[in-house]
Image 1 (cartoon, rainbow, N blue to C red):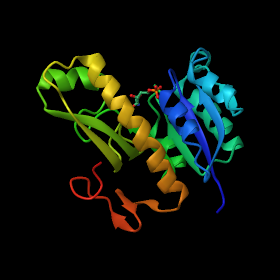
Image 2: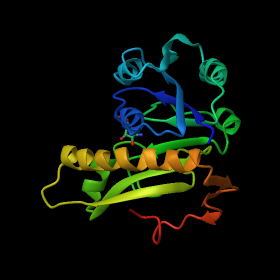
Image 3: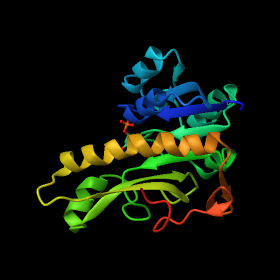
Length: 211
Ligand code: GRF
C-alpha cells in the first residue's frame, strides 16, 4: 500500500505529534512539521525523528491573510494528502480550511460537540459533568465543529483537578489520534458533506465507535 503523505501543524508541546511519530504507522509518511512558534518543543521531536521541520512565525506577518498564504505555500510544497493540527493555536480562515477540505483533521480535548474552544478541562470541572474526553474531527470552517471521527471517554473523578483531568485526557488523545490517522491512511475514512464515514458508514458515536 502507498504511504500517506502527512503534514502536521503545531504550536507547542507536541505530545500528540510525538505519539503519532512513536506509533510508527507503516502506512504513514510524515513529510513535515510546521510550527508558528519558533520555540515549540514539538519541533525537537520532528528533528529527532529526522522529519523536515519549518517555522513560520505568524508575528512576522502583517495580516492573517498573509500568514495563511505563506503557510499554504509551505504546506503544499510537501504535497500532503492529509493535513493535521496537533496543538496548533491559530484560528484558520474559511478560505484556508476549504483548500484542505476532506483531508484536514484536528484533535480537541472534549467530547464534542460539548466544550468547543479553549480551557475545556476547567469548564468541564466547573460544569459538574461526570464524563469528559477527547475527539478527533474533520476541520471545517467553524471552530471545533466538524464531524467527529473518534472519541475517547473518561470519568471525571471526585478529586480531579484541571491537571489530573488534562493528563488522563491527553493519554487518550495519544491513543485515538494515531488510530484516526491510520484509518485515513487505510482509505477507510471519508468526509461526505458534513458526515464522517468509516468504511462507507456514518460514524455513530454513541454506539459502535466510542472507545
Ligand atoms: C491537546 O490537548 C489537543 O487536544 C489540543 O491541544 C493540545 C496539544 O497538546 N488541540 P500537544 O501539543 O499535542 O502536547
